[in-house]
Image (cartoon, rainbow, N blue to C red; front, top):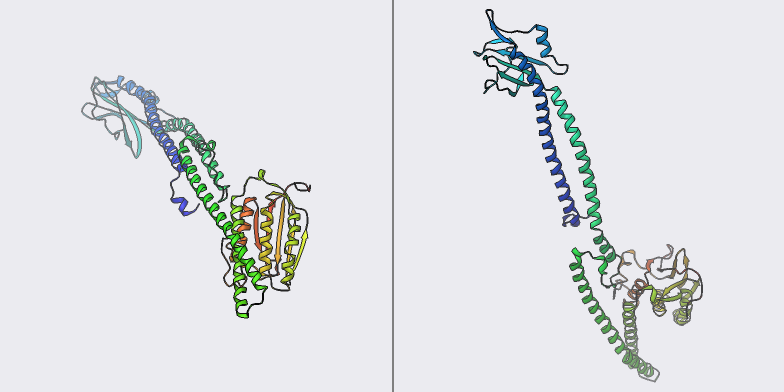
Length: 462
């Protein structure tokens, strides 16, 4: 994820943050309540059992001629305060605070009322204890304290029994929340995937079936924007085609008149000017033709079902007759190595694609060089390739030469910079791939176009 993506607001993160934080808050609250309930339950249970020896001892405190004492045998007294887990201590004090029996350093109870048992927490010899105290009707105060091992163990067991299922439920809820959010946002992913699959020329509206109710207004607004872009693009293409078409006729007439003049006897100075005018007219005518081809490539149907079966071998074979004379005039060896390669495509645009590739190759190949056209199939892909022994295309320029009117700096060959732009448009319209490289490490350029192959080698449709 890029830094820019990390700074953007995410619906997924916001939903998950809210749901997970809410669940954690509920679990934390449940843990606090469970802990409080466990302490209260443990204290209630053990306080009642701790109160029994307090009553027994208080009932057996008596005063005689020897003074106050606990009227119980020592073994019975020890049995009252015996415990296998915790340490139990007791203390009996008179109303004046004198120790009658038991330990003498047990913290005294405060705020005690006669006949009303009191429970409180204290520390005895560095260890926390729970104390039950009772002031009997005869004024004696009996206190029994015990350590907290049983209570803590019971609290731990209760917390374990309550919180483990709660945590498991919370984890399951978080997992279901994650899955739910992912499932709920899937329509957004479908819209995103639909847009990423499109080329820059595909301005069809997004299907309403992909848009959930929550983002339907956004999709509707986006489709309206696509409509405006489509109208603007159509107007631009129509203007380009009309302008180029209007230029073709006068340019063709001007070229014909200049050629007729060049056949006559004219002064040398005038012939040089006429030749320069003829060259400029030829270039302008070619530019008009390329603009028409570009407009047609942009407006061509992109759906494969609207195409016909076309054999690239037949397309290249027809081009051999069209370009042989120009290759011979430039002393260039134009060769063809053709194998059947059947695709579905536009039978008018595919020859235009190959013509631009061959024209570029012949323009940049010096006299005595070679240009080779090949067709064939590799697995599920059909290909058409043009190689030349010219200067080649530097790696840094290969992504730029398909831009309109772009020419490599220092190029001496004449051209408008539209040839490969037209090729790219045709390739995109056919769902193909354009590869620009060099001739097997031997220098020169190698441009290969890959198309989805049609199974079988039947003859293309008429």
